[in-house]
Image (cartoon, rainbow, N blue to C red; front, side, top):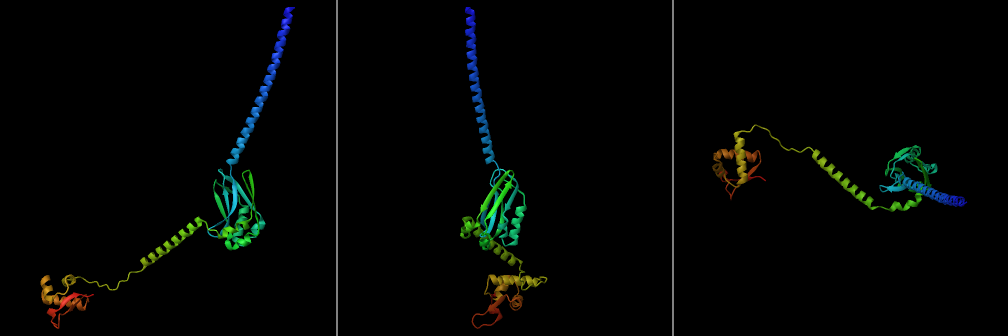
Length: 279
């Protein structure tokens, strides 16, 4: 009898323990499930944040470049390349552009599908500053699609009117460098023009040199170095005959016109003449 009661008591204890174990396991399983769901949500959020950061991001903006060219700048600002980029600009804005060339470029852009690498940009010309008022009449409504993304942008060009009177420091530097380049080009062209001119040669005489020519040159050099000497002094210095020296001096005087002579006082004797280089 006692043994039966002991078995009942032990069985009841086992049943109660089993119930507590099941309850605990249920709570543990629920907590594990909740932790798993939280981890999955966190993982999805991390993937979402990663994809939001590491994705292409194509934008379009209005700008004025080179002191007066109105343009749209298309740029992939994201770290990943953009594939099959399609840009559609409302036709009413395109029709408002008067220049056929600029209008044709926008129409070609609407039909294009292109690739943009990370940080790559494209510039689409709209026209010059004189056309600003006409181009700004319509708001540009732009739809951009690429990969699995779509963007919509509206640009009211009239809000950028202040840019027409603004010159950035970069633009100032650009204009200064342009002036330097233009001046350099003018200078180089002038040098080349001067170099291409045919040098002017006034007198050329070609003949076979003789002993008399050599002595005449020697006499001329002596007169240049030691001017205002008489025929006798020159002949003695160069060890030549006086009559021979006189003949060559007269040739230098009358033909070559390289030397001249003068007298002291009223004397006109050839032997008293003082010879010097003609200026």
